[in-house]
Image: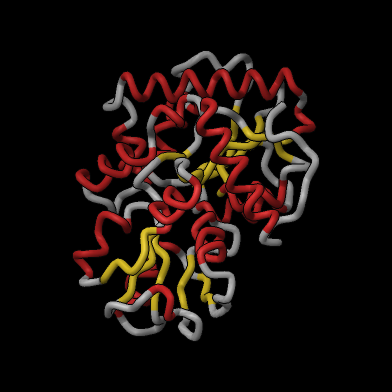
Length: 277
């Protein structure tokens, strides 16, 4: 393929860990080259909604809005147990008493917001801000509560914040399935052969990094300069797992369940398009 494909992923350690081999030709890329674009996940969601990236990481909430244009890849997902978003506050609040509270969220199309809306459809007062500013906003009293994601789940206690609700645990109790947070999608217009090649190369890249975890260290640190090594390692350990290599039957069931429930709740539009090509 002569022209490089645009490839979007976040600077979070789990993404840089998985994509490092692919963008540095450490695995067979099947003749495809990439022009990477690193953005926070909500920016990637917005770019995908506009169809501006060929291949990209998106939140599974966003996937519900772009299924007609993008197909899901079976590799590269952040999906698992014990890794969901947390609802935190400065002072303990019963999560059932949030109706009139202002809640900071990391984006309108994040899975974090999808889960919160499914937990309590009556909640309306959301304030969107970058995920790394939410804990300070809660601590300073700018909002009553916040939904935190990524490495914040490892550090919120150091801010003196209280966990009100683990939305991942709630989902696991409700569904009996792991929580799908984010996945990799490719434009359907690329065609089945190209999408299969991308998926195979990404799967090889995930396997390479898991077998050689130190190889991407400098690339990860370059994009996560404010994160200490311990948190960085914990982040990768939590979000990169066997589901990242391949969703498998359980992962696929979890995604279908999430999207079906979101459809039923009227949060995402219905789609007849299959998840995969």
